[in-house]
Amino acid sequence: MTFAFSGAIGMWHAITTIFWKDLKIELRTKEAFSASFVFALMVLVIFNFTLNLTTEEATAMGAGFLWIAFAFGGVLALNRSFALERDENCLQGLQLAPIDRGGVYLGKCLANVVFMLITELILLPLFAVFFNVDITARLGYLVVVLVLGTIGFSAVGTLFSAIAAHTRMREVILPILLLPAAVPVLIAAVECTTYALGGDASPALWFRLLVVYDVIFLTVSFLTFGFILQE
Amino acid sequence: MPGEPGLLAARDITKSFGRFKALRSVSLDLAAGEFLTIFGRNGAGKTTFLKIVSSIIRTYSGSVILFGSDLKRADDDTRRRIGFVSHESLLYKDLSVYDNLMFYARLYRVQSPGQRIAEMIARVDLEAKTTVPVRALSRGMRQRLALARAFIHGPELLLLDEPFTGLDERASEILDGFLDEFVKHGGSVVMVTHDIDRGWRHAHRVAVLDRGAVVYETPAAESSADAFRDKYHEILRS
Image (cartoon, rainbow over all chains, first blue to last red; front, side, top):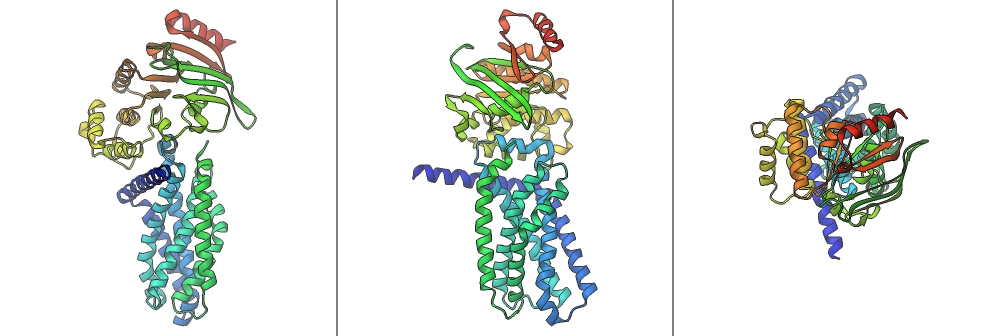
């Protein structure tokens, strides 16, 4: 019991230490935010000006555009996540540290979730303006879906970002690995977001898929991260 | 004193990367308070050996007993007792000098980290650069900061992978000072290098790794730098 408790304290310590380090670097450089925000914004602007949708069409299809923008922007932020560990071989510093490697994963994942959510929360009102969509119809539900979708995307993205960091073509490898694996969470998030924007079809099944995907990928990634970090 | 029972006992370590055998049945011991220098050409397996001892590499055959426990089952406390210095600084360029040390102090759960950081910054002569991001430091300053990083948690065993590579005169002096003091206070060191002068200076015992195997081992007191240099070149020619 005591062992489990001290293990949990140690894990929490590892997660917060990694998280604060990534947050501090991001606050100083703003590289992940600026890259993902500008890219995601451009995706929304292009969709808006090329498709010229009515409000009804935008309500029905807007969720898809929104998650395409989030996903592409998110890939850039995730690429950055382990790029900063490659400089000066900082990854070795984490490998040497007396902390659970699962804690390193959860700390990095938490940082990625927070960075992506900040970008998404800034983009959301812009999306409403561009597409003339009411995002307040089911706002609480929309926020929950954004959080769950982002956790799922980051859970698998953080894992693949670590894998890609060991390869030569890392910037190319990440989207090739990540986007197919993230298809279930993206589809579920789009369906749930469509409902949150005023759609009629009940997304209960998709919502459950979102939750299950998050749990499975967080668990599997947490358990396998030690092997991936190994040389 | 050197020669006391084993702090580190590596037995029959074999490690392959695909078809390439980096280490072949390597057995080496290190007593508490001992300074072991391992020489060898590039690709001899020196760094692989250090990575196994530091538990960066965890899949290998053979056994490593470190601080009395099997390294494959070692807990966080075992790793907390190890310090590692390589020619790469392991520092985050976008964090300041202070923030880098604070990050590592937190990772290693250093008591009173603020006080320890101030002490280490003073020892490596970087007081004027505390808030400066690492990317704005010179190469020599970065290496001094890397030393502070490696010593921040007060390790008992120090692993050095070509630590003098790229060091300026000042940083080399500081590293020599650190090592002298570390060994004087009972610390144990494994250093890998191909710089005979630097490697011999502190060593109690030397070994030569060649093509993944230990081909020569002797107490430093039973030889001299010049005699060893001849022997080493003879090994490299063979």
